[in-house]
Length: 369
Image 1 (tube, rainbow, N blue to C red):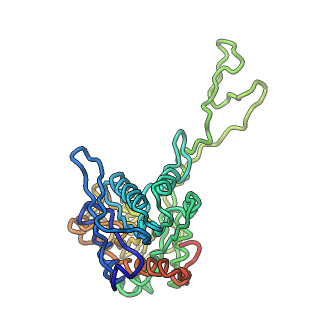
Image 2: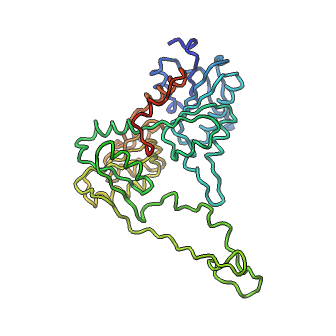
């Protein structure tokens, strides 16, 4: 395809070679060349972007994969978007397969909703549209003042299960926490398999974290009389008013709801980063009789000692997509496998550029995916 006549350009905002692999695969599928630009860090770690060709009046797609250095990648995206905006690009569309800070989408005690801040920054920099994949919470789309297409990786992971897992009909889909049950149920229904849910003290769900509902802090001695201080939990904000005592939340011992004995256990989730919870879940499933354990996730961040912990665990295989570069982790742990999702990202770019409906990319996709 002649890039000059296609009406759009595709750029990569990454300064590291490993992070441009997905961009190259997407442009190969589209039959276009990657836009000419230079992204680099100054000696003082400032980000500099030089666009080497005219983008006036063009629709621009910026592909940005997020490596371990998340904040640098965000600055690269912001600076490139602003450079394209000031160069009179018609539309600037960000292709961000893994959207960073998506876990920080709820108010915490004395915290902030960082995901909302990032959405505002991207809009201010000049982005007019975003293509992403499997947001941690779908409600994040409401933070943006422009359209967001949240693609799904589940068709690719389901295809991997059917084609690469021998005797997958003897498998059971497992949710490692009750919050992941809807996603697991969606997989189980489409594969026509059973469902198991794990819960208990080994889990640490986001909903259990302090979210500010216990603010303001307790008031001691509200009546102002010295020596009459009561325990903090008995204090009330106004004299003469007693609030009901809040029962402490305690998790029961870890339990597996569902029979996994003699079955292949497939744990599904959207992100696998710190793997301690997955390793603990795998050990419990082994104790309950599962003879093989697979982990399926969209975004394989695999931070820290994750490759070593996976290699030494009861997990047989970890399957993730290439939304996040993890070639180094694969060298450290042969149990990690990759599913390529460049096809759906390239098709999304083509459809948006041609003004076609995106509904085809969401066929057979459930709300809970």
